[in-house]
Length: 64
Length: 157
Image (cartoon, rainbow over all chains, first blue to last red; front, side, top):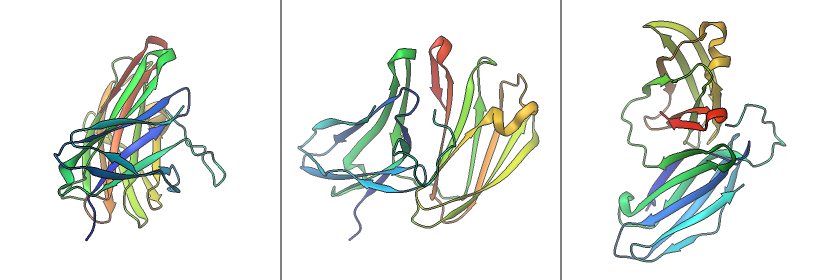
């Protein structure tokens, strides 16, 4: 079974920007999230899985 | 915003992202990317969403409040296959510039609207954009950024 997938159009840490990813579990169940960053050419970088408790949110630093 | 000077050895400093999760529905996860330049008081909030587009054509408007504002259009291939994209910019209802782009899997294209339009842009404050692509509907995401670091102005479209 395919897992649900969300997409973000853009992130950058160039030109003095810091980037953060906020993840929020909207459900009463625990949730595991597998984030993958892509560079501008499409090269993937899989980040560590994030475990979220029910209705928990977390802020992940992408970089600066 | 990032420019276009990216080659095979470019540092991993900009791009797109994907979130896979094990929720019962797609809506089990809400997410966004926040990009902040505190030195210039700039911030962009980019939603991370499911792409439910039912068409291979995206329509939008670009705008700026001041001629000094820089306007960027960014479009991203979220598919694992290459994507051919055609962009057309309109000013006052007239198509003024078209371009064709080939995006690799999960690749981004960053367009500086002033560079794309050149002298045509002048002090124009708004215009239309059409993006069409050869691929499954939902394969392309697009966002626009308006920014003027000198006065701390930032917005998205």
